[in-house]
Image 1: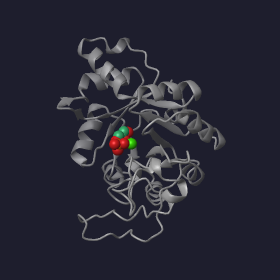
Image 2: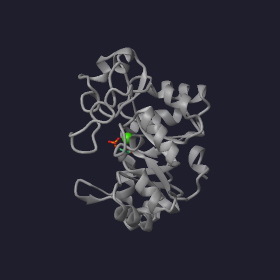
Image 3: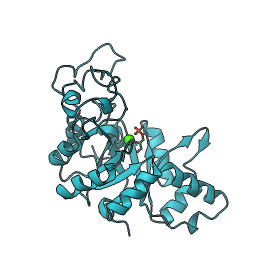
Image 4: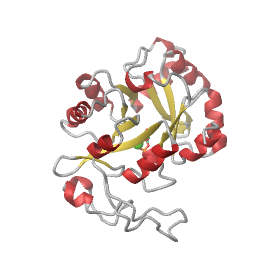
Length: 266
Ligand code: G3P
Ligand code: CA
């Protein structure tokens, strides 16, 4: 039995807006999350990091340069400094010819602002870079906003996830790369079904380093073990179709509109 947010979905294919749907609007912003929620995606995916003054903000890169009009590491900025930046500044749908979201007041949100704005919306939260006490801080915010049943927490940092599971039981988590590699390796030797995982979902790319990750046998093993299989980052409809046919039950995509259309939900 899957705990938390995944229990409510069963095995239906989920459309997960990667960073809020970064192909359609400025990533990891309330603006993006609002529009993705309006499309009726199943989950919003977001990345969390800390500012210099220890606030959890929603930002993918270590630096603010790629997405805003500022520069430098977010870990060197106070929350006020980070939030003074224009997070719509760099987004362009035409390779930089035009920037329709500049000067619209789009900011880097705090994680708490996202929880306040979207209390009901299921969310995938990625601990981008764990910092001392971040797991506890994340859990405290989830509790403050009664979100344990609303989020799936993932990280590339296995140790952080392990700590998070300990401090925040009952929240669904997705495997980090170490667990995924272990599962893939065990599957090669036919022992995948012996794994009794402490996580409820795999979030995996189709391939990594030239190796196919999403194989039929991995999918089968994962689904037999009751793990949700969510694929990233799948942006083209033929690939979406193919992975759903293989048994994936989540598409993490920059273009949630395409996935919804494919599933006949738009
Ligand atoms: O869920 C995993 C996926 O979000 C990883 O990609 O965009 O955080 O680099 P990204
Ligand atoms: Ca992410």
